[in-house]
Image (tube, rainbow, N blue to C red; front, top):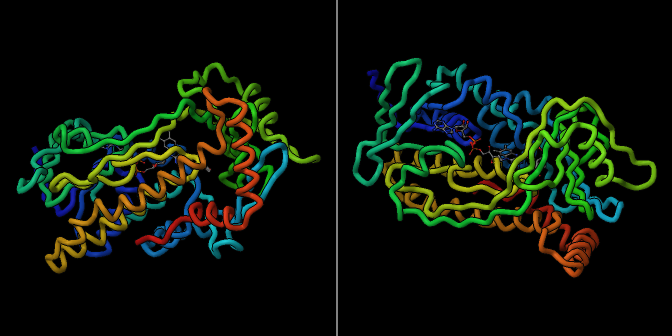
Length: 394
Ligand code: FAD
Ligand code: DHB
């Protein structure tokens, strides 16, 4: 058995865990991080792609932004497409801000490189991770198996950054947390294709056959999504069928063409809205997807994870530097104010753009009227833009 001692034990090396460990490092606070998956798996896992301006600023400030500045694509707006017509929401004009399209796995790659270059302790492929003694006055401990050796990490705090399916949230005694949840009757089928993007900006498309989204990862790689059944079997979607469906849904103004290419990755993601309150139990603090999930239509999951750990790092800094625990005590409440605003926005974007099984003709007309309103009223466009580019990190 190997025993380690650190200030903050971080479970999970996704965006939340990695940004937290870097923020703590910059404040001279020690952490040890353990991750169930291999480094390669974490660096290749295709997920989100949109970074809010505040996330971009933070990544730059913590020294993780160099490659993002070179390779990330700054977008000044998005298109909402319905009835075959595009309507641009101009973020820069409406908010003075922009977003950056840069894959989550690239962010993770950059952060892992940065942390390891600073001699961070990250245990990849940690097995049988368990946490204990975090309630109240205990001595928080993380136990795990690594390369057939048992480890025990004693820490002041455990940061539960292990995503929706992690071990931290389920380790909290029953009855301590309140769960809020909505599961949507559809999922997204996502592909990555070796095709040049067909437009300079993202296209969120409402179509009678279901929602579709055109995004990108680079000048030669397109990321595309289709609304599908929540438990859709990807095997029943050969590439030709995916392209045919994308062509139908994304049909645009005369002359607009969706570029096709080799499909290099595909998968189905279910969609839910989920929050636990509070985001803390004694010395266990939950952050990111471990505490909340948003449907991806607002492109918020990663950004919300980063916003949580920004608040957490400042609270831990105050605790260690001044002995003042007020910010830590306020952590959950501070984060939840943003979480619920982002939940509302993500639910709203999802509701406006998807077809629902139980909807009737009235609902479809109402959705079109809403899209018409959002794209023709400056006030409504500004509301969308303000939420999409993201609120300042508090
Ligand atoms: P995660 O990125 O999930 O990181 C948690 C880490 O903890 C993982 O590396 C995991 O391996 C590790 N872990 C889990 N259990 C344990 C354990 N027991 N012990 C140790 N480590 C553990 N958002 C969007 O905005 N747009 C999208 O298109 C989009 N697509 C997505 C597709 C998928 C398949 C998923 C799952 C999510 C997607 N999201 C998307 C959401 C977004 O990617 C997440 O909100 C974001 O990853 C949250 O970061 P996190 O660090 O909190 O959690
Ligand atoms: C991407 C994902 C999203 O959920 C979204 O709303 C916009 C873009 C993407 O993967 O590029």
